[in-house]
Image (cartoon, rainbow, N blue to C red):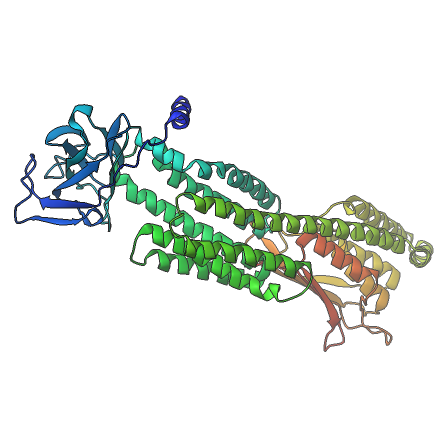
Amino acid sequence: MKRLLFLFCLFVAMPAQAAPLPDIDTVVACVDPSPTPPDFTGPTCRSMPLREVDSQGRQLWIRATVMLPADLPDPIGVRIAAMASSAFWWNGVAIGANGRPAATAAAERAGRMDAMIALPPALVHRGANTVVVRLSSWHQPWRVARPVQQIAIEHYADPTLRTLRQYLLTLMTSGVFALAALYFGAAWVTDRRDKGSLALAALAVATLVQLAAEVSRGMVAYAYPWQEPRLALVMAAAGCVGVAMVGYAGWHYRRRQIRIWIAGSAAAMMITAALPGGMDRRTLLLLALGALLAILAAIPEARGHGEAARRARATIAALALFALLLVLQPAFLDTTLYLVLAALSAVLFADQILTLRRAEQDRAATAMRAARLELALLRQSIAPHFLLNTLNALAEWVEIEPEKGVRMIELLADEFRTVADIAGRPLIALVDEIALCDAHLALMAYRTDAGLALRVEGDPIGLDVPPGVLLTLVENALVHGRYADGDAFVLRIDRVGDRADGRLRALDLVTPPSRAPEGRGAIGSGSGLAYIRARIAEAFGADAVVTAGPTEEQAWRTTITTGAAA
């Protein structure tokens, strides 16, 4: 922290350059293993642009003439940005080294990626000056197109301060992404079905990683072999940002195809990353590709009407502007990129916050409807005709077989206690719901004099459902249908995962064929089905579906699909 504070103070106090000083563009380069400067006239020497100088796997000498003005700032130095160790001579005098260049890998000591060598004032004069640099890059992890990026004459200062000044605006955006990562990460942890928040949390984290790798050049004086791994990390993080953009758009607008879109975008990112060319160019391509794929995912929704379509069009406009800036201003990767990416992220963040707010409002409305329907069903379940029919049957059993009458009273009391206990819970174990249905069928056998069973196909262990959902289906079937002794309800369970980590995919309840001419055991479109739909939507989200209808065997089938994927 003290070093960071010291660097910041130096950065603020660093004066502006007093006069424009030259970069070195053209040099004479010689492949020569000697430890002293050559005469630059040998057969291995030739003139070339600095960008073509390649010191990888060898020792190289370069010489350039530097024209200096009269009004030089004081002090000045030679700044080098290169994936190489280097040593400097100014007007024939050795002035310093960055690492230790050598003719062999064993003898070389890796220098810093960015270094500044001070120029003694007595050696500097107006007009032509000669600089000679000894270079070697034996420890480069893999070959690169341009190992020597820049050699320039500048006001003497810590080279990291110059880079830090360049990244100042970039650092200011880090707080936006850090807060977004925390907020949307917490939103996803709270509701694992909210993949939109997961995508934005991943986008924010990947951007922070990319930003940290980018800014590290101005914060850490690292040796040159780390430059290419650092750029590879920047590119990988950019690919993750692109996939996160596609994931966000896919979750909102192509939800059923979300896996295809994410897998396809990830494959496209890997192919793009493997293309030839500089890492900066490929990094920009990855970001532009992510934006374009996200636009394609959002187009179908944008063609519609309503609030969702308007938000989709706003998202497309922001993504398109971002991609356009990447194409028109390809040199802004180090700084302006993060400002533009922060602006784009702000649009996506606002869109997701509106989505979360709307989902919360829908959940509140669903919970309110469920509460009202639950109260209505409770009133219906204790309606006079239900009690009268049950009490009449109870009176008959008490007179004829007192022991069965007492058992019926106990079953009725147990059912009322169980219903009262679970009524306020959002979810109960499916095995408990099945046990409640079994108890209700046992009670109804006394009243209807017909023994009915519930046959379960599938494993209910470890699965949860809203309370009273199956009981409502069974009770409504008994109200609307007439069944023979020995008939059975069939419950089929479709699950994802094992008992330790299982999720319910679907429930399918089929009633026996009704013997009553006026009905088939149907729930119909009354409060029972409305209650079930409300509780299922509250528990499993908008993707959950409840369907009901007759079968070919004159039975009635009700299917609850939760939307859980394999």
